[in-house]
Length: 583
Image 1 (cartoon, one colour):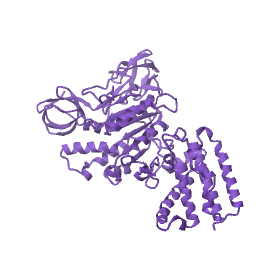
Image 2 (tube, helix red, strand yellow):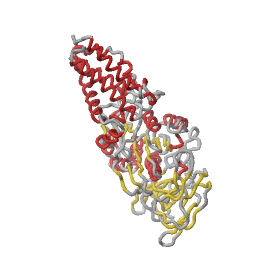
Image 3 (spheres, helix red, strand yellow):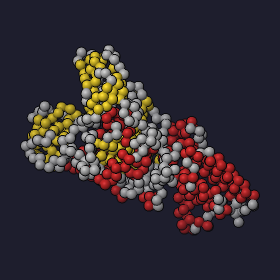
Image 4 (cartoon, one colour):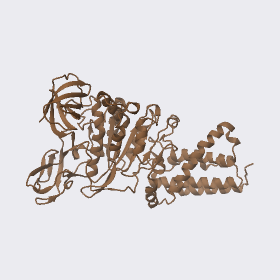
């Protein structure tokens, strides 16, 4: 293998005089401790590498050994349920220390394997040659995407290490290839698929403001920007617990250690609402806190998406939670500065936009090499300084995502959660997903969604006017608009992640609640147009139940929606029968 001698080192970046042939993104081992690094620049006989561990004690003259391979991680069924650092090395005890220098990604767990093919079978790249039974979703043993051949040998069913040879393939040239349950894959290279499929269904999150107003397609991309204290982490935990993905990959990229420790403590104790078993059985957590080497933070995003693609190739629907891409961009900025590159906007490197595009582009609904319909959905949290959405990471992210969930500090301070601002957020896949909602029994979903957004927009304008002239000076129709918007905020958009009744809302329950609230608004509009006062409408007893609709009627009580509907009709009939007018 090629070697080089360190000539200059500064933090995680080193320059070395090469005496052999290196290539871009090649993994290298540096110094006596053989710490891991990666070549990021080549110039004649000089290479520049970033080191993924602490460089304290390294000095000019230390040897850099090339591996001849790109920076890769070992992918296998044993990843599920694990805690790893940004280079997919197990974190045995995250409460004590986050990583051991020079640790490897080898996992010692023995997994039950059952072959599904026999000797003589021809296997294409990405084909399934066995199944792995363990807690969580059923998993498969896959042929690596760059390997194919005829099965020459196959082991019997039993328990094996992930790196144990299970199958021997003979390729077209007669060369034997040993296949294990796991395999290496470069983190910066997207895993191949048969084809991409146009998304036609949402990833159901269980959060009404997201599913109804700003849905994300399964295999889509969403950005979740918000300042400190606006609820990004809590919302992502809720999405991880309740979204209808088969596997959750959570990447804590450069977050503060105390926040990440809460995630590492909370996730193993969460219960999977599908099975009643621990949620960790279908979760992979990649933790890379701000006190870890900055270069490893830059790699952690690629590690996370590579893991997500591996489980996608298993035929599963995967949700990747990246918290946060801002810290990843800061790592890019720091390394770029040490390389002496010309800075762009806010000091970020000029290639920030292209790196974000490469990351989000790896989200997709696909037909896998094994022929399955599967997907990776990316939800990237952004932490803009002072909540400024015009800063580079947020503004560039908006170009590459289809759903933009803007967290608002004012709503968060008012304890209104999820604190997503309905007028600065958007979703571009509404037209694609409208048919899905129609098939769920809500043909009016799109019209109701547009009415709700219009109502919230009118509320913002009228509240500015009311602060000047007073609410009582507004016409009755405008007072009713404010009442209706307040009702929709309280009864539909507000949803507590800590409520034992309302922490999840199914599509059927969302549709029922939305129809019920729209029915009340329709009856109120007719009543006010007929001369009933807004004060009288605001005094109806049913309003209290409607404001707490999410808490009052749970998933197993949907038949009560009809009772509330009838009560609305009775109260309005009695109200208008009394002859109360607007005067």
